[in-house]
Image (cartoon, rainbow, N blue to C red; front, side):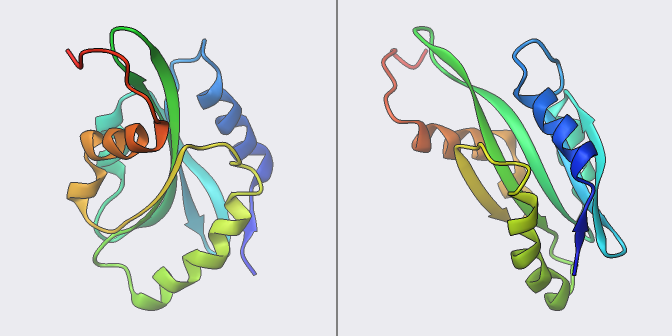
Amino acid sequence: MTSLDKPAIREAYIDIRNDNSDVSWAILKYEGNKIVLDSTGSSYEEFQSKLTDDTRAFGYVRITTGDEMSKRAKFALITWAGPDVSTLKKAKMGPDKSRVKEVIQNFAVELHITEQEELEQDFIKSALMKAGGANYGTGQ
């Protein structure tokens, strides 16, 4: 059974949810039979660059959505399995995701992504906005 480095993951989770923190993402990766905190940061491009075609990981990201009337932070839990990850390893991620959700509990959307195009920030932001409901501004 896969174990989880809960203290490190919880600390990153709290940091990302903190409005006064610059940290906006975390990546959790496998080390043998353990899921560990791989990295955190503030640049979405850096987050995206770490999810390569041959990796499987869980990502937690904070993205600001809204318009000129109302801006707010939204959170997404991403399960990433690149196109070069074996079917067996991809299948194992399902049960492991429930372990990750023991720590990462608050998010507006949960996405399973296997293609780089779907990792684009606009794709994630669009999914968050669809989940978020009302948009009162003019969209400018």
